[in-house]
Length: 467
Image 1 (cartoon, rainbow, N blue to C red):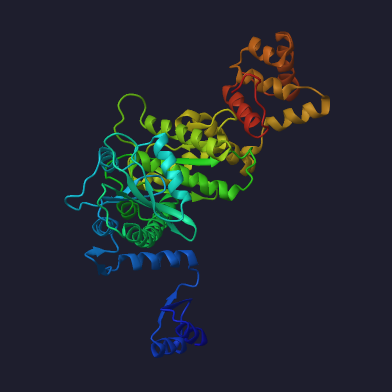
Image 2: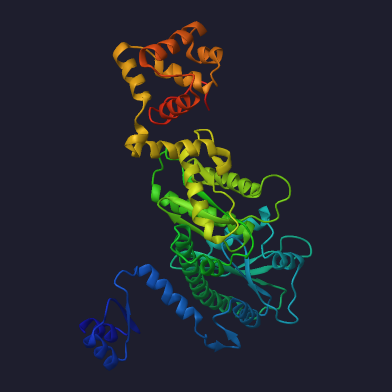
């Protein structure tokens, strides 16, 4: 009650509360003419803000001077009409977001190329003009950069000290007397529109990420999720997982993970357009379509993308990044399995192996899974391997390592002896001791297999030549 009255007295349009509002606040809101919105108890405030921003952005915008304020293209046309020159609106990366099409207003070749490519051509001269523009507090007049080009009138678009983009007007010498004033006003409107567009984009990414998270863990309906994510029916998919190298220390792990999410999303969107990426427990997941593969194994293009992302992210974050690629699956219902593959690849990657696909580390992955399985089951953890380790501990022998080296070497005595740095006869003697003292039948292939698996997985021993 008091909160609603105070909000109305302060001129606020509405109040948002968590949980049920109750009859009292509702009556106060009706009496004061204040909108009252109740959201779930567990709703995150930033999510509520994004939903409200999206709702505001979706409503019809008022028209003024023939321009719909909710449309950047309409705003560019309105500014061009008021200022008297062809206008473009750019983001901070010099991407052309909107441009005017007022008849009779001249444009030069540089402007034409920027519109066609939706990107301002890069050059040292352009870089210097942007430096001057973003350092100025208001509109600036900039000289033509070369023959055939026209001067520009430009202004930075800012909100709260943050640069959101810029407005550029071609100056053919016939601009309106109050062109700078009109352009500054246009920049203020552009700031509102760019903030609204950013909020809408952030909401879309949030909702898409939440849907992908549920698809990855198997709690979303695959067909519905695939349709909402814009996945093309019949196109195989694979999950790529990216993570900071756990052996390296990042100054701020959470912030670094968020930056990694942005980097992965940027690279994926550059190659595939709208793309679903999400951060879950420090791992960035991307859902990649496997299309147009000609020659080589399916998904080779995704491996090259993962390698490129790992390289770029490592340079940008100054922390090594690793990537695992799950198996290619033909149906969205199998995406959780591809995600499990990608997670497992991250677990078994070697120290000098930043990127791998599931099929490339299949043997290591199977042994990793077997280690967990054997360790969890009493009957699977029992066996002669314990007797070998106990004998070594009691007698100071090295039978366990000798067995692992011999088995890793495919029962090649000479190679095992080389790994152990002993004479082959020493290996033969130790194996005879295993047979006679411990009663292990090394001629039985099943006995050898189980003994080797248990020594490799449960005891963690490996031959010196194993990779």
